[in-house]
Amino acid sequence: MYICRNCGQRFAQHTNFCNTCGSSAVEPENAPTPSYSYYSPAPTSSKAGLGQAIVSMIMGIEGICGAIVALIYAFITMGVGATFYEHFSYDYYSYEYTYGFGFFLGFTIVLAIIELIIGIVAVALSSAARNRGSKSGMAGAGKALGIVTIILSVVSFFIALMAAGLYA
Image 1 (cartoon, rainbow, N blue to C red):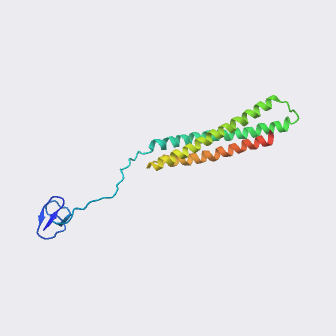
Image 2 (image 1 turned 180 degrees about the vertical axis):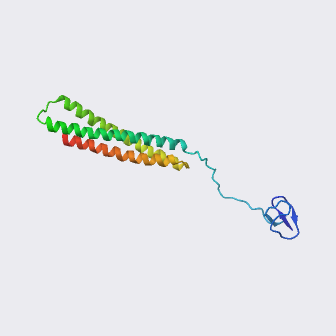
């Protein structure tokens, strides 16, 4: 005897499909019921990590903007130092130069360090969003923007240090 595992209909001979319900689960009557012992992970939501992905993208955008400002200030620092070096090289007591050059140099270095930290956090958040199963493109965008932020921050930091070495 054969039995349909779906509706329980009995058959005298083997058939591929149940005539009652149409199921293909027709087996011998004494066949053991299959038991599944494999681990099935919980289904992940498509929104898992979406918040982290959004934050990483926003931080990446802010990081790019801040790093560009730091880069501009680094070039201004070079210009202020070059202007002093060309025109006031014998005036060692120029308070205006010290204040102006020191401000631009300090601001550039601090801003570059802050933007470097923001870039690192953006990359870390985007990686965490990917690890949580985020399928959003925002996580990838946040990572790319974070990497560009890190590069621009390091470049502006070293330009400011170069200005300090050349003109201070």
